[in-house]
Image (cartoon, rainbow, N blue to C red):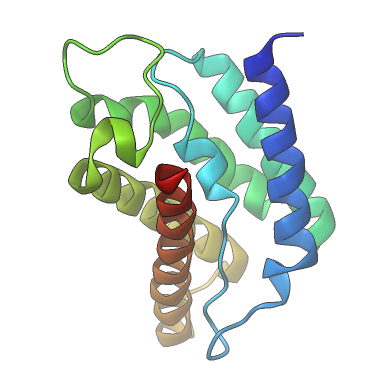
Length: 167
């Protein structure tokens, strides 16, 4: 078995379990929930096959829908950012980089990684909470959920990246 697939599978299991068992129980100020599993899609290598990114993303979303009782919301949102990730990554990658460039703070730098992560997280939370609410009658709560969850998710992702840089 390829080591990359094995690493992905372990990350898949760990992020699913952490999200389902711990992070889904956190609702900071009643609206901010960390959605750490988005980190799984952010870290796909530059040359990773697009069909594989879509498959992994959909399966991650499907598993989280099963554990979180959100029918199709996470699967649809994860599939969308899985589709967009290779195209959103291109402007942040140096032209002369290899196809197997790892997406991290080490390789992209703080500024580029931060902006790339903010874009992916913002798109994900916007789509996730729009599908979950499916109406705009309580748009203040909707905006608070998007903003709060985006900020909390972003802080968690930067904390994990900072820990991996220090190793």
